[in-house]
Image (cartoon, rainbow, N blue to C red):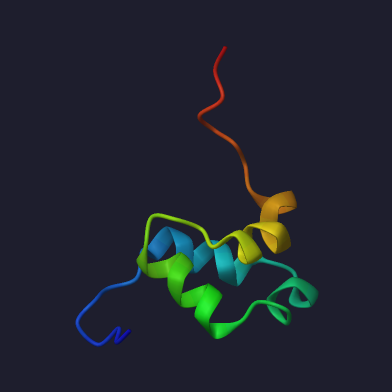
Length: 60
């Protein structure tokens, strides 16, 4: 999985950078890469960041 020819989602990069240090320390490189370069959030990463995600698409 090479990221040389891909561009990470700037909003996702900013989100990862905004997380508290104690959360960033437990996120693996593989989880971070998957989050920045794909639509799906790995379940293992979701469990670590779920308290920081704003669910904006929840309507009725």
